[in-house]
Amino acid sequence: MKNIIHQLEDLLVRVDKTWKLLDLDKSKVEVGQLQTQSADPALWNDADKAKRIGQRLAELQKELATWEGIRKEITDHVDVAKAAQTEGDESMHDELAAKVAALEKQFADLEFYILFDGEYDKNNALVTFHSGSGGTEAQDWAEMLLRMVTRYAEQKGWTVNVLHLAKGQEAGVKSATLQIEGRYAYGYLKSEHGVHRLVRISPFDAEQMRHTSFALIEVLPELDESVEVKIDPKDLRIDTFMSGGKGGQSVNTTYSAVRILHIPTNITVQCQNERSQKQNKEVAMKVLAAKLHQLEIQKKADKKKELRGDYQSAEWGNQIRSYVLHPYKMVNDHRSELKTTDPEDVLEGKLDQHVEAFLRWRRSQK
Image (cartoon, rainbow, N blue to C red):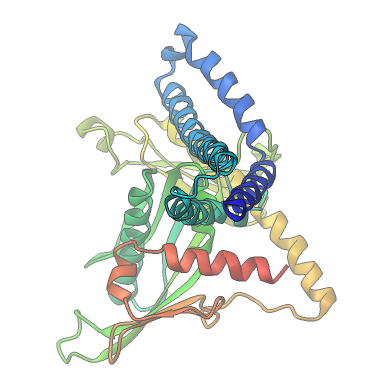
């Protein structure tokens, strides 16, 4: 019984250490603040803000309840084991040993969150898809990736909003932007940032030839109000066009969609999802701010790489992951070197194995 007590106490120490690493005391303070905001009747004058606050509150409460639950369970079993030891009762040894094993596994799953050590890993994500050269074939591949990420987000219980969607003439998408709302959405999805390569028998080729297609996924954190990105209005060109988004016939016959060009960087963002031009402009500016912020971070990182002598430009040939559907089946992540033989499952949104492998690889590179 003494060994059981030692294992439980050691596990409790590790749980407390992880609690501090995840800064869950700060999350408890935030829960209190959100509860206060939720109790204010005036909040419901802004339905979108009320929804965001409610979603974040629920996510934080769920996370804290999970960690507090395992803490309490370990403490309770320590008390049971100590009482049994005092009474010299060994009849519960096997039952407690099984419980220790179960708690160790539960903690190992929760400990995964330590891998989210980036400044913005807890944020929502802005995910943009671009088809590569190759017309319909590449556009179809971009749509497959859009579906993959959407399925993954839905499996995580996150909210997916389509901000922009430009469909291909025959099939697929030329480009698309998603706003994915959920705790750690960026932390998970940053594994998908980069060029994705597909090898398959083309469904658009009457001769059933094998084709290779490329598509790019950009993943950015949605910035909160604490991050200030200065944008000079003189640097912007703002165009409006007819929306193809939600809102019914009136939206599709008014110029509610917005396209913003940031002239110094040539970055273009679009939003057509919201019901008014004003809302679309606000969301597009949020996406632009995220892109400009990331551009500054990337410039600093590239400068460091140049100084170290290992700088490599981003090109289509530098794909992060390959998906082979013919002549064999394989998904190969070229960063973590994880290889699996289940491309259909991965394309259905079962990405956890590849996400975790990427995060562990990334941590090993630091």
